[in-house]
Amino acid sequence: MSKYDEIINLSHHRSSTHPPMPRSNRAAQFAPFAALTGYYSAVEETGRLTEAKIELDDYTMETLNRKTQFIKESIAERPLITVTYFVPDKRKSGGKYVNFSGNIRLIDEVNREFVFDDGTKIKIENIIDINAEGLNIV
Image (cartoon, rainbow, N blue to C red; front, side, top):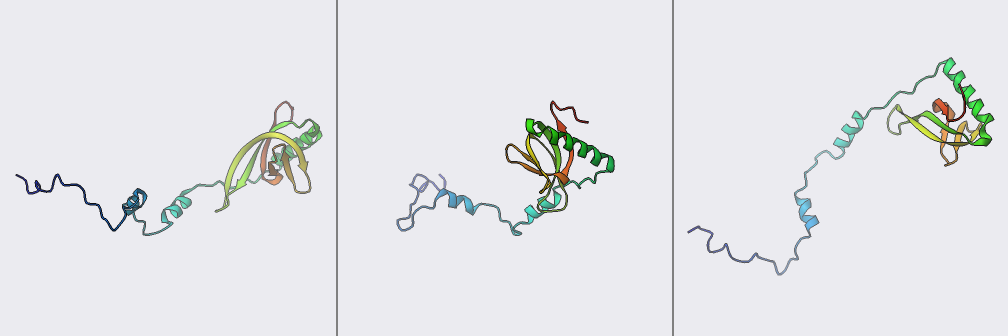
């Protein structure tokens, strides 16, 4: 005979004055405690790597200018081009390089940007490479 034999088969007690706690609140009681709010986010942000922006040499700048001029002459055809460009990071110095492909609509010389059919705008000073499908640009 066990010392709990007399209570083992009794029904579970339910309070008549307090409603049962919802499961979501019960789960919160057992959640881990973070004494330093935002600490782990700050550590993650510090560990996130960014790339430095590449400064282009004269030869590369001349090549990009030739490619831009060639695209400008073919703009009526709305050629499909792929642009590699730098996107600055919003939180820390540096950024990342991204490829974008689309049909170019116009080259906005006032704002110095490429404007594509889908509305994407890319600043010319952030571009490091341009490739055009079907256009023989060098």
